Length: 98
Length: 491
Image (cartoon, rainbow over all chains, first blue to last red; front, side, top):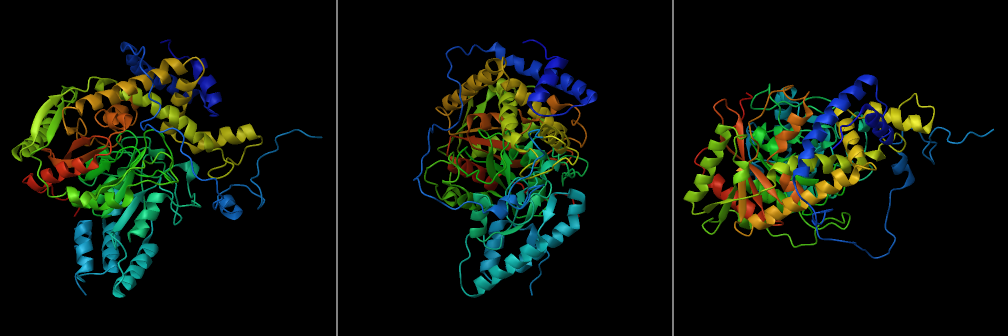
């Protein structure tokens, strides 16, 4: 497998929505490089024709009756929100509007 | 008034009997545990949130019910504590993370409800590696927990607070979660019993998710009888967890006191290599000899893909974690960075300040292995090897009823010894993670002390949904091992 590069670390940090300083980028480059080099040992195994195991249990869709049941009321749902107006979660403005 | 001094050192079933015979009260039991916590927790540091007033109130209410002749349930008056990733409507649920500090869950996990309905007295929340990621509890954003047997050593992890609390008599029973060994490894390090049931045996509703195809809730106890007692309460189908298995749950107490002469024990040759410390090997060998004396047959089996377990685990677990932790965005709950001017900044700044170093490392790894161009090479490949690991267990269980291994290659290591080397830390789970990948149940049971006085653990792995046989073999060993593992030197 190709070695992970600094550009890869920056790209993945963007996907993961993390802000990394230069020191953290260098540290992750080294640590991720070591861990990925270790997991490369899986390539020793021929897995052609093996069905990937997505899940332990042999279950597919689990259905229930389509009936209305209780859910959190608004106050409970908003109780832990860092910023709220009592009815909605508040976030910074998304669209620039004049 | 009876002497309450020794109540905290008793097992849950002894407390149950003392309560029912009228020797003591639920309030006395709770007070004895609270006194013990006040005595030793400044050194052990197992608790993150202690519910002193709540516990005494609940115990008082139980005593009133008992006085009226009511039966409050199989765990009446038993003091139980929970890992900090169990959603509780009392106290906080923080996962030992800065991003969830002071989070008050608006709902309660199914297992927590089951404990309360069975009469348990909940004592509080226990320390852990942040979001259950780690093998030493050093990744807690709040505090390290110390091993009661040697204060300079780690309790293991990620359920380190849970293991330490039971070992130090700060709880009669504790519940934790196990994704790659996070119950069994700390149980081995702290000298108590720790079981990871079969995937699907216990509802995960209200357990903060780390790696959803691997996570499983399980108990820490002081003896095997207590293990049967708590398993009878927590196991079973839950409509709120679609992955909980719709299978009958046996009465695990019927597995106690039984013979093992019809049992075949498999010893996987891939586990007994040079990586295993000589002393640990000797302890497990001696434990297997005890079971052999009781009539069990012992054979060698092979789990040929054992050596690939850690590699598979460190692709699948971070991949699932990166998806599960994406929900922490500073909007609906948790830490929100005060400087964010845009939504993108809100996400980035809140996550970067809210998550600790190990959690960020795993989010990065998981995002990388799932990213375009690498998915097949890493994630799909890992799922294929996972299938091979499961197949290894299926084949081995055609020849034997249980598989016995050491729980860990060494006894507890020192605080700060491995914290700067993630790969070395990950290799701690070498004997435990394959049970999660295959979804099979396993227990760690104390099998002696090393020359330096540290606990050693034996792991008994069973067939899927056959916790009964594990409990039966564990109890046969405990009854016949010929020594008392004793208590940690905390006095």
